[in-house]
Image (cartoon, rainbow, N blue to C red):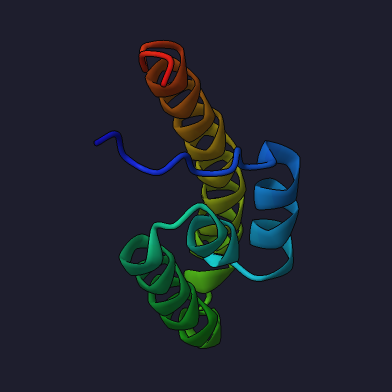
Length: 90
């Protein structure tokens, strides 16, 4: 029995979701733990804005979240395409 076929992820949507709320793109990609971790880190970065360093770390994490969400969606799509290409016809 072959694994169920997962729908392809929209990499652009994943990046936009992460732009709106850091970690949301990772959750869209199915990486729940990673998305929650990104959200937690961004919350800490927001608190660090009170001691100046957050003004540096917050945008770095925000950009990293968008890029990561996009790249992970592309990678998941590539893996899914490879799996479906190698499945025997029923």
